[in-house]
Length: 336
Ligand code: ADP
Ligand code: MG
Image 1 (cartoon, rainbow, N blue to C red):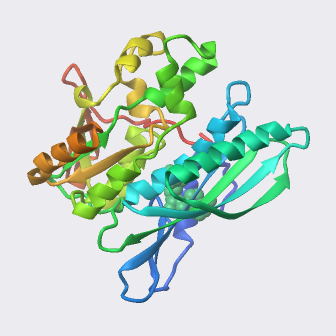
Image 2: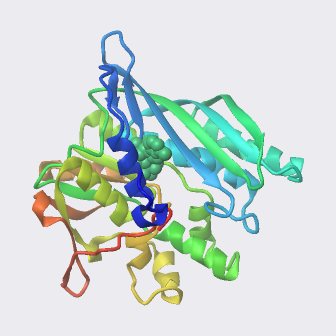
Image 3: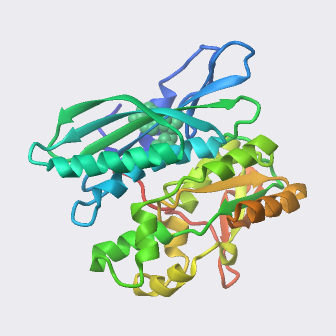
């Protein structure tokens, strides 16, 4: 690597460089760097795969002790990993957790954290099988989650085709708005629903597994960094472009009420704010009715927000006023 600093290339530029330097001829490796989880064939009939994903949470970057409840932090540390398995349509099974902790941290913080972790683990039937512990100046939490899935059912970031619809589950921007509210005024009255989305997200496992099992999508990713960034990852891996209709982006009532205190643009955080952990997927138009029926049966909103275009079109947003925009800055990226 050259004399440049990380800020110049950003998180995704760095991952791109790391990825370029890695080659593998291992036939068991179905997916290495470049998707939400790594996928390995487990042998046997060649149908079962091992899924592996890891995510890190760092004090001061991903959470702040002045408003973080350790119980919720435990749940969230696992939830963000579960979301990556959800985006493949896989089944989470086991996890390891490594923690770096300052020596003056109270034992009650650690036990609440583990209570939250165990609660989330029980809910999604995953088992803690190990980890590592170290002294650290700031709290650092890293989970490595293992799962399984049938190779022919799994959904990757690659796979979207020109003419497919683009769908998203739930509503967007709530978690990012909840964080802004916490930063500006703490636990503001009436904003609990938004704050909750930031502090205690819920992985869409059931939805991801249903879409994968029925083969009702061509590509899928979870929205962890923001709609535009995660859409751009899906486009890049699939080699396609997209047109997103801004006025179709699903917004919660609370979001619509609170966003005006933070931005003149109603859609700003729904487009660029992270941590929604919703699923973003593409599917051919003939599946629209089935996808609506699935949304009704699981009681999860699923909204058609765009259409997949040829790669040369890039990423377009049709703004509320009808203007066609190709945004240059997509959202938050580490180091930038
Ligand atoms: P997600 O937001 O779904 O967790 P990321 O954007 O963090 O995905 O990562 C994208 C891809 O890059 C994944 O395949 C991930 O495993 C890989 N990746 C991220 N950071 C590194 C790293 N430091 N070294 C190698 N691979 C990495
Ligand atoms: Mg992901």
